[in-house]
Each structure stands twice: as structure tokens, then as C-alpha cells.
Length: 226
Length: 236
Image (cartoon, rainbow over all chains, first blue to last red; front, side, top):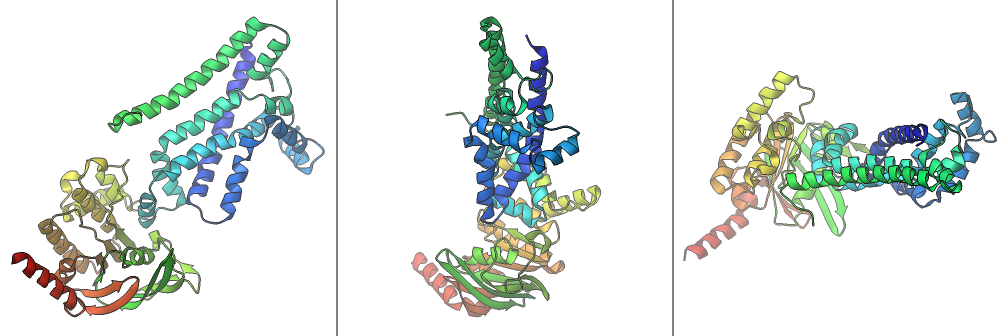
């Protein structure tokens, strides 16, 4: 078992999820509460990684963060090293790649909060930040959990972006998916089964968290699941 | 003094109102679809007019031409809609305290108790709002709107879930409180007895148009006759 790869994968997924929640909550709130035609363009941009092949996204990021572009040079200056083929580079790629998986559940959850409640909060003096923190987030708690769990899992199982942007550097960019790929390539099916079982277990555990939260809410409301 | 000069379109509906509410208590009377709720939302700042302005005691709250629009939370206005819109994740006391974030904890608690007592809902303080009846929810929504001491109180059929006696008693208590605290109040209703009971200035709306503005007895004379006629028919 490659414990180093497992720990790196979990660290990458945790950091990505934390950054995504910090970005996705205000972004989703803006998409739901904001006005203006430019919001449709913003939503399309935030959804783009969903339809973009991971290898294409990884390639674009590899070029963008490489030494040939001004962005790549500026970021390298900031971090002290190029972002391509580094853990920080993987975090950037993962955040962009998983953005729709955090934003979409939150948009759905925030949009389900009745407008009359948002109006009531505004009339009582709540600005956008207070409306989000005291009203939208508590009332869309399940969406928040989904918005944390889905990107976490998505990052754990990520392959295309990792391979393109990070390569296969032990301790820096070698995640469990890369390990699994290497094991299969080397016909080490026993090790590959164990690695796949860990990835599968993580997915099942995370989905159980999402659905048990929904079940508890339905029971608390005296409702039942269809 | 509330000065209103509004022109707003919502889909196929067109609202046009131009008047000054000089009285401390004004009733907007009109049948369903007259534009009462639309007008209250414009006064509260929840919607923006196509044209026009709203000013309270000389201070401009909305002016479409000058692109002035004061945020609903900074208008010192409170709105109680027919649907109470209580926050379901907060209990009754926390709902009433929501607009009092700048108050210190002791004063906030006192204010919550005071407002719940005013609307006859003291015993509900610790209750979850999802377990309240329609009438109880409307009382709590009223307490929540009154708590931050609004200068302008907008009421959109706020006691529709209360029975006649309870509604009359609460209306009487509310009128006394509004008078004592110099709160300009605008009550929207389609109930002619509610409009006549308050002896207020009445704005009569019909399909988005202002039909009349004046003392209730004058403006609602026709409605009063219609009501009396209906009562006569029912007793025969």
C-alpha cells in the first residue's frame, strides 16, 4: 500500500475542498441573489469544467502555468517555483476542475430558499453577507454538505488533470489514481485491487454521509423519502 | 408625510399612483389584483419602479430619475405581508431579534419581550416557528417588524389568519402603539370593515389606478352601502 500517495491524495482533496467552499459559497450566492445579464456568463464559466475533458483542462493549465506565459512567470515568482509539476499546481487544477461540483449544489440549495425569507431579512437590515451566513447557508445545509463531499470525492478520483499538470512525482504529485494506473500498467493486479478498494470505500463512505444527512432531515420533519 | 409618485409595470400589470399620505394611518383599499401588494413592495424598496419617487418626511427613498434607491434595510421601514415569512431555523425570540443586531444583548432581550407582549405572543418566545398556527405566525411577524422601531410600517393584510375579535383587538393595540411612537402606517386591505374601523385616510385602488384619496367615510361610501345591502339581503 502506498501510504504516501494516500496521504497526499487526502491532503489534496482536503485543501481543494476548503478553498472551493470559500469560493463557491459567495459565488453561488451571487448567482442566486445578484442581478444582471453578466451573471449568466459567470454561471456558464463556472460550469465549463463540467463539460471540458480533464486532459484538455490539464493541458490548458499546464501551458498557462508554464514559464512561457506571463501568468506562469508571475505565479512562479510568487511561489518561488513553477506551479506545473508541483502540489500547489495540483491544488489550482483541482479547484478549477471541481468548481461546478461545489457551485451547482449550492446554487440549487440557495435558490430553494423562498424569496419572501430573503426579502424579510433585507427589510430587517441584513446585507448580502448576513443574508448568506444567517439565512441561505443554514437553510441549505444539505447542499453545503453535498458541495463539500462531491468535490472531495472528485479530487480523490481525479486522474486526467493530475497526470497532465502534475505528472508522477512521489510525495509531490503522485496521487492514488496515478498509483492505480501504474500498478495496472505493471500487471500488479493484487496491489491495484487494494488501491481501487480504498478509492471505492472513500466514495461509498462520502455518499453515505450525504444520504444519511438527507434521511435525518426528512425524519426530523416527520417526512419520508419517496 | 409619505410622498408617493410611482409608475411601475410588472408583466401586463401597470400601477400608477401619485399622492401624499398626510395622515399617520392610511389604508390602501382595493379588491384582489388592485395593486396593493405591488405598491407596498415599491414603498418598502423590495422592487424598483419604472418611474417616480418615494419620500418619507422629506427624505428621498426612491427616485428613478436621479437613480436613488435606498436599501430596504436602511429605509427604517417594516413590512408585514400576508404570508409571515418567519425564519424556520430560528425560534420565535430569535426571529423577533433578527433586526436588532446593533442593540446590546440586554436591551435586545427586553425589546423582544416587549414586542411579543404587545402582539399577545409572550408565551411563544421559545417555540419553533414551524409549529405555530397561521394567527400566531402573523403575530410574531408583526412583532419582528415593529422591534427595530420603524418610521414607516407597511401592513399587507397582516391579520388575515386571525378571527374577527382577535384581529380587531390587535389592530386597536397596534394603532395605539403606532400613534405613541409616531410611526406612519400604511395598511393594505380588501376588507371594507377593516378600512372603516380605523377611521383612516383611504387610498382607493382599482386595477393599478388611484381612484380616490380621502377620509374613509367619503371614499368608501359606495363600498359601505354595498356591504350594508349585502347584510340586509343575508338577514332577509
